[in-house]
Amino acid sequence: MVSLGPGDIDLVTIKALEVLKSVEAVCVPTKSSDLSFKKSLTFKILKSLMQKHNFKKPIVPVYSPMRFKLEDWEAEANILIETTQEYKRVAFVTLGDAGIYSSVYYLLERIKDRDFSLYQNSEVVAGVTSFSDASAKVKKPLCLGDSALEIIPLLDKEVAKTKIFMRPKIGMDTKDIQEEGEVYTFENLNFKDEKIYSKKLQKVERYMTLFIDFFKG
Ligand SMILES: C[S@@+](CC[C@H](N)C(=O)[O-])C[C@H]1O[C@@H](n2cnc3c(N)ncnc32)[C@H](O)[C@@H]1O
Image (cartoon, rainbow, N blue to C red):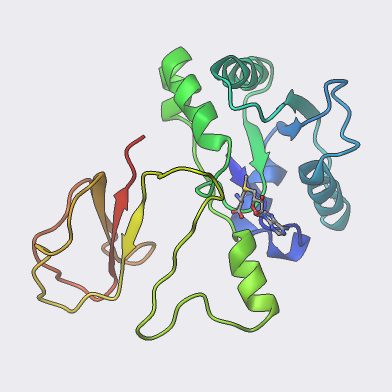
C-alpha cells in the first residue's frame, strides 16, 4: 500500500519509489467505470514518476466508485488479491498519505478477512499529506509552540477522533492522556531502540515518544 504524496512527484518518498520499482504490477484506482484512467490523478502521478525514473510496470485498474459501500471495497480487494495471484509483489497506490482518509484501510480490512497471510505480508508505505504540502507552500506551520492541529472532515455529524499526543517531558506520568479509542506508544521511530507498544506507557522515558489514540469505528 504505497502513499504517493500530494501530486508533486518530487514529494514521493524514496521508499515509495523503491517499492514501485521493485513490484511486478501496480494497482491504480480509477473512478471511471470503463476502467480508463482519464480522470485518475493517481495514474497521472504514477506515469510521470515512471517517466522521470525510467521504469515501467503493468498497471491494473481498480474501479473505485467512491460510494463507501462494503460491496465496492470487497470488489476492489478482490482485484488486489487476484493480482497478487498473477504477480508476486503488487503495489496499490493512494494519494497523499495512506493514514489520512484513504481507501487503503477499507481494503486492508477486506484483505484481512479474505486472505490473512496476504494481509500479514502487506506493508503500508507512509507519504506526504496534502496539508503538509499546503503548509509548506504558504510557509505557515500547522502547529507551533502552544498550538495544536485538528483535521476536521466536512460532514454534518459528530465523528470519532484520533488524537496524537507529542512533545512529552521525560519522566512525565501519562495518566492525563485519556484513552477513548486504542492507544499506542511510539518511541524512537526509525532510530536505534525503536519501540512500538499497543498500549499507553505509564511513564515517558524518552523525548522522542508519541502516543496515538486511534479512533474506534
Ligand atoms: C480522500 S482525502 C485523501 C487525503 C490524502 N490521503 C492526504 O493524505 O492528503 C481527499 C481530500 O484531501 C484533500 N486533498 C487531497 N489532495 C489535495 C490536493 N492536491 N489539493 C488540495 N486538497 C487536497 C481534499 O480535501 C480532498 O477532498
